[in-house]
Length: 330
Ligand SMILES: CC(C)(COP(=O)(O)OP(=O)(O)OC[C@H]1O[C@@H](n2cnc3c(N)ncnc32)[C@H](O)[C@@H]1OP(=O)(O)O)[C@@H](O)C(=O)NCCC(=O)NCCS
Image (tube, rainbow, N blue to C red):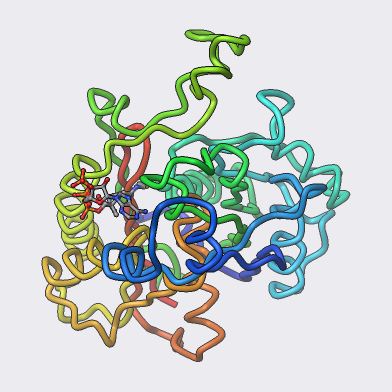
């Protein structure tokens, strides 16, 4: 953060994952795939699937409650709620407003943010700016997805990759030596069609035809996304480390978006960070899009890996195309 601005820090973390576990063996019975193929190509062993009555706002609110409890803050103290999601309960109202109501956060403004799998870091950067500028003291940032609702369960190219979940962080003013040191946001709309949900918006409203042609499901060019991800994850992480005034050797923990273990490996190599400093939970949750980084952050906390003063670098890529990174001192 520039001199003279208030720094924002993460005062609490919370997650929620649905109970139901879908394993690779379960998927073998649904599509022409194998546990060996999925593990070798992605590192995923299982993922969570929301119950029929659960929607994104339910997952988001559960994670948010846990984050508020962790921070020792009541819902009434929250000034702003930002929910990063590509799977909102409805196109409108915003899922953030539904979360506001569920929490009883009666003083909070609320809006959704759409940046695909980069969404949580985008929301973190956004919330940090509200605190830096003095417009808010307490911001609740949530990444939440029910991707199982927009996955074509007959398409083996995509259905093995994704899972449901939510993670939340409470942002509050922090001393300069502790908090969000630097953020970086990027986008390249020319790659938008590489990863998209074609129907249901103003370009192609939902109709019988769009449903018959499966245009209400995720469509992805996996190979191109893979190449893009390997390039931007490393570049964005290096750039945010530089912006924070750090060198790669000073990184204590690297928290990449959990899409694919091969992409994570490549990004860590590019950054020059050994795998023992990398947080990996893609095996248990698959790609949970905007929930992926906070789920990994909370896993690191629960494993005792978030030591006071540790330099943490988070980085993600996603639909848009987008990418984002943040350097945080714990
Ligand atoms: C999707 C991904 C795992 C595929 O791995 P890959 O090594 O690139 O595999 P390829 O696309 O080369 O496909 C290899 C073969 O496996 C097949 N295949 C695809 N999915 C399969 C599955 N679930 N089970 C078995 N075979 C599968 C393909 O049909 C292809 O067969 P073909 O050669 O006969 O056409 C990989 O490209 C990837 O992770 N991309 C990034 C996706 C991503 O992160 N998306 C989210 C962005 S936020």
